[in-house]
Length: 421
Image 1 (cartoon, rainbow, N blue to C red):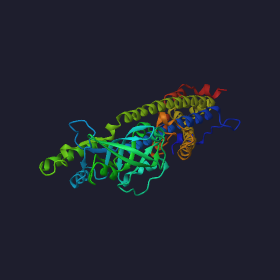
Image 2: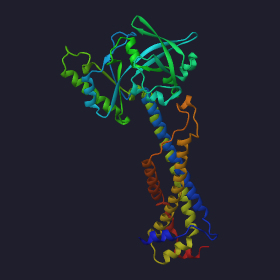
Image 3: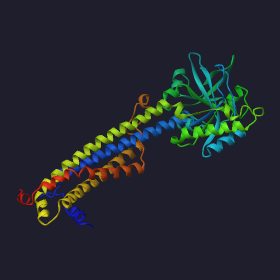
């Protein structure tokens, strides 16, 4: 242990009344408050982005394989077949992902007094998790028969049509120039607080839509791919398209024209939800601004505390100089003392900040307006790595900030310092 570290550890922050001085209290409080605000800002933005991304992934697959775009725009369903060759191409390109067949089909719900256009999404049994997680009424069986005429609608659709669980909805489908009608029973009502999707999307068993449009069990309108890291979605999407294109070139045009890779369209969530993704990315700017402001506040607090502590120990500085200590050694002693205060402030800030995050994550104490924020509470994400990085950054930056102000010690004369009252 060096001399400066030893002396910096032994010097007390207490004054003649055996209480910490005002400078000490201000420094610890300033660091604690600044750290809490920075920690909560990072936690809220990370939590908010995670919740919104998870909701977007529930409504939109991370990557979609779509059939070729029709030459004429009409309401006729354009089928895509999930053949074994296509499954192999997906597994080859994205081995860690899960995929499933789905059908997205426009329809019209009608009651005696109202009607509403929606998009019915046909799901297989393993794909109902998102609807179950946001269910507010009714229930969704763990195993749903493919041909069950059941539908899960949103809260906004339920209010618009005046229907509840157990009631039936007359549903009209348009297949080219043909109108098909079915009665569907409302088995559940969900609410994701994402009104842009809630008011147009309803969930049904995929087998029911296959029966309506006379499709076999491996035919649908899209293949949904999930289980990919969000940051790698664009790269994985491009890789998948390249794999499908190569597969297309290897296959005979006469044998399996529909499953040829070159005819497929590949879309991804980053393109479909670009408006929301860009909005979420703007939140990072807010966090940077808050961190800079809080760093400035903490820096000014530390500098003020350094001056106060130096003024309280002017005679001690004179004694150090009289004993032969260099200005650099004395500066190191006082910087080390301030770093002790920084550590105290970080301990207080970590305890309070982590406590607030845990309480909010568990009890959702702070509410939000779903219409404006798509969530009914303030989400907070508690991750160890950001906390560690933030603590280390505060310690390092505080030490750097104190280097220049500590030069005031060099201007003090030993003789005048020893006579200072």
